[in-house]
Each structure stands twice: as structure tokens, then as C-alpha cells.
Image 1: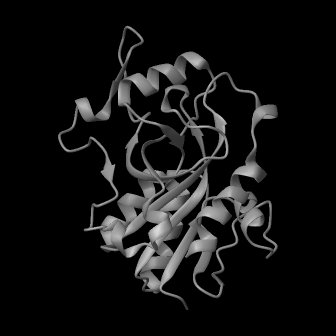
Image 2 (image 1 turned 180 degrees about the horizontal axis):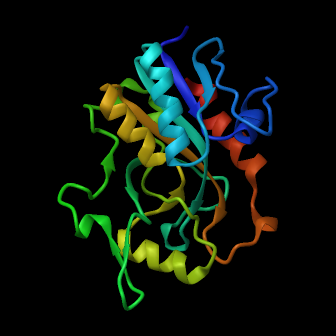
Length: 219
């Protein structure tokens, strides 16, 4: 067992980071013990990721957790496909209520203290990371259950929350690590620009290769 856990959302992402075969129809919750860190698939989306990461941390003690995976970059972020970033904060973007006029009211406007999650929720200090990882661009993230599939929704989310990237698990990492009082770090590689949905423009293998090169190979 190593002191660092690398938590990966999906089996597809894991297959691009490690040669161990995983089942495409379900989670492989086994821990892969690499030379310098352990790895585990924790599931796509906030719920599965939080439940499975909690199960691991309840039974194993790690010095820190790194979440690695792909993300979409909002058009005004200045990011390009293939860029690797460290996400410093997360907001759950689609948690709230729809008003009678069809407008959306975010949960943070209704419940005090529900604004978001910061990477330093449990005294996280980037100084414990290897130096190359400290200098990766730091960005703000939005965690959602439903990824934006139109340019209009992308622009609305970026304007509303002032964020750079979109994913489905970031807030879950910070929430779970805060509960277990373990430093958590989120690293993402941009696989696509968040605009009108067109999977033919996604570059997932290239993004994961960049993530491995810029993060895992430097641990």
C-alpha cells in the first residue's frame, strides 16, 4: 500500500492510464498498487464517486487523494484541448430549483453555507505536492449531474458561476476528503470545449495521455 491514492472516475479513463483490464459494464473497485501510488476506479458522477471513495478511505489510510480525469473547458477560460490543470475549487452547478417562470435558482441562494467546496477544506497545502504539480494552472471547476450540451447553457454557466471547467465528480472529491480530513487534489485534462455537443471533436485519449505525462509520471 502506498501513501497516495489516485482516484479515477471511469473504467475508460483508467484503461488509458493503466494497462490493467477493467470491466466496461461495471466498476472495478480493486486497488491497483503501482510503484509510487495506488489507483482505484470510483465511478462517474457525484453519487457513485463519493460512495466508493468513502468506502476505500474507511478501510485504508492515505496521506492524500488525487482525483484525475477529463473535463470540458468553457469557451472564455483560455484553455485548449489537451491542457492539464489543477482545480482549486468546485461548485455544484445544477443543484437548486426551477421557479414557476422557468428560471433557475441555485441552491447557494437558498441555503446558507452551500456555496461550494474548496480544495483546502481540510488544510490542503499544495506544498505537499511534487513541485511540477504545484505550478500547473489553477482553475475553478463546476460539478454537474448533466453536462452542458449547448453553447447557450455553457455561456450561462460560466457567467453565473465564474468557472473555467466542467466535470461530474470534483465536488464529491473535496466533500469526501473534508469529511475524512485528508488533503484532496483534483487534476483534469481538457478533452473538449463545452459548447454544442459534438462527440467527434472530443479528444479523450490525447487528454488522458497528457494527464499521465503531466501528473502521474511526476508523482
